[in-house]
Length: 170
Ligand code: HEC
Image (cartoon, rainbow, N blue to C red; front, side, top):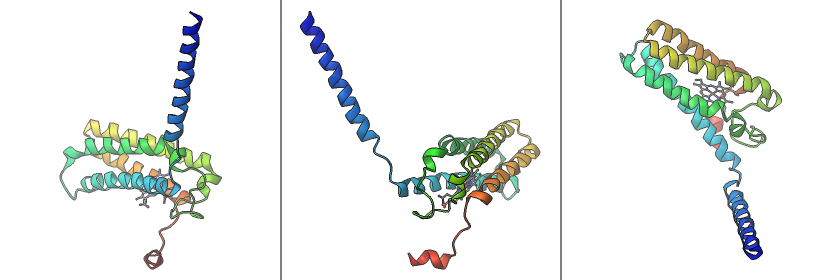
């Protein structure tokens, strides 16, 4: 009986060791450049949904039936951003090291950055709700509130775009 207990125990330890080894592989940190590219792509997805809805809100196109899906899609993308803020903006991914418009204020004033992300997240949730009501006027008002939440974060935390000429050099 004792023998079995021991070998069972060895099995458990072996399993734990394997688990740790597998965990170590899975936990190889992502390259900072790739994290920056990734977070830019997430931002672009926000912008794409905003442009799509903007065209309808401004009356350029008549696809009002698309608004609810687009508002939901923005909500989903914004969750990827807001719920993973620390993973998307880890320390050491600023403009001193990488090609990014993330300003040092992000890490200097993390609480404020986080608060403006949360505020933005709440506004996108309201937009998804407004879309359900089908009230175009209310939707337009909330759409602009979301836009303001983008700007409220970009102003203090996103650097201005560099001039094209400089970018070309590389
Ligand atoms: C809580 C802050 C915050 C909010 C809210 C926010 N952004 Fe951003 N956004 C940033 C930061 C920081 C960057 C710079 C990222 C970088 O260059 O690494 C950025 C970059 C971008 C970019 C440029 C991406 C690229 O390819 O370089 C676009 C476009 C953008 N945001 C659109 C939006 C839109 C549209 C919204 C609202 C629907 C929004 N953002 C909301 C912080 C925010």
